[in-house]
Image (cartoon, rainbow, N blue to C red; front, side, top):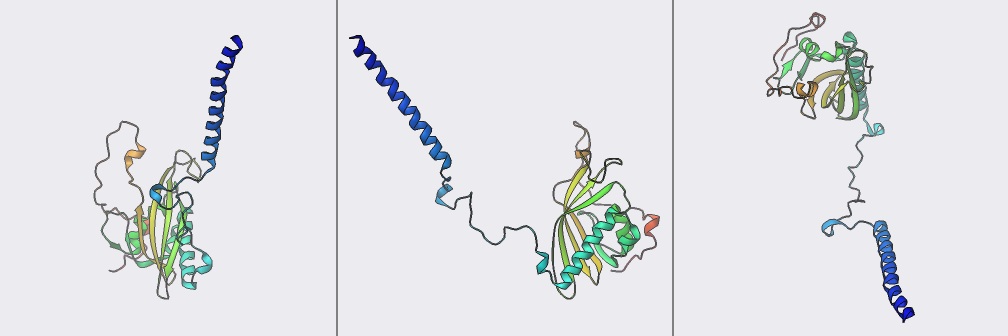
Length: 227
């Protein structure tokens, strides 16, 4: 009778062990199997290529005019980072058209541009090109770029560091005959002084149209331009 009772107890134990083993095997199989597409559609883990996946542009495909415009745009950024006002302004058309801020009215002239594009005079900023694209023909070329501006205090190095305040922007630069004829910066994210204030500070007021600023002396020698 004792043997019969022991055998009776062993059966549930064996069944439990077998059931646990089946669960482990099933879990492993599910982990290795590809995830089913939601709604019977395409597997999101491996979607078909559509021809738009790369985010860069192959320089081998530039036309000569496009390559020349890219060179101007790169030097435009380089001279901003070196804070070389004469070298930077040598790239700017005297009748350049620009908006120094998305809320600004359309403005003209190299003198005002020199004043508005303060990066060339501020030793505490650095501009980084993240992506660059170009399209154009014989008359002019349009350069589009994603740029990150890092406004860092003196002593933090040119990489900005943790104390840097990075601002991502979408940038438009039109180049004609080796000169920048149009410029426009547009912040990708909402940028507010509140981001640089301590926690609990008063919220920044709504953005107001940008107001003209006094022209720095270093910019006065450049032409006002004409509309």
